[in-house]
Image (cartoon, rainbow, N blue to C red):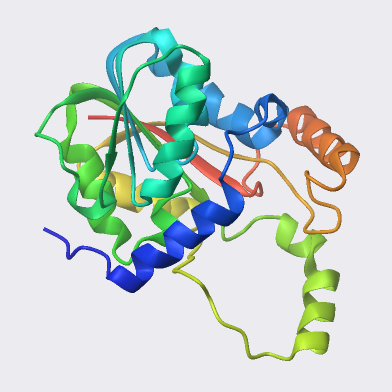
Length: 248
């Protein structure tokens, strides 16, 4: 079993939740390609009996699944962000079992769920292979996992290179990271999934973006154009997000 995160790391997540996820997500979030790409993978496992969102954040995916699942369960390291998820669910009249916990040591029994989502979480783990093994453990035989994480070979790195270079010049190379943040190649994600005893059924990469001041919050028209380009392209390996649908 993995060690629990340190109190200092948990505090970082609580502060981040207060700053960035104090309110439920706007309905506009569902129109973005990032949400859409996750949903395209997730809906292949719906309807389902028991759904787990491991790293549920502000609850947007729990709300989207809604009554397509017999029961909803969400887990997050931050208690503050779980408060936001409760608000989002209450607005839709939905009930869910929301728990604070560590993805590397899930507080659930073996084979408890038939559909598990883990989106944009493993890149923040100290031991991602342990986290994926835990996701596989709580899946029932024949159950499905939808796993997404950051793509190391994203074309957005090229798009944002001029800004990144400018920021390095202005700030210098010394900077601090608030929490672990890795990225993976498609092959590395598949290795994690297969190493946990799961069989990949579908692999995608999707979404391009620009950083501030041209991100989806401050320049939504720019993001709409990038989303439209991504939708029009044939399948590729250069999106921001690697998404895998796998079966136990």
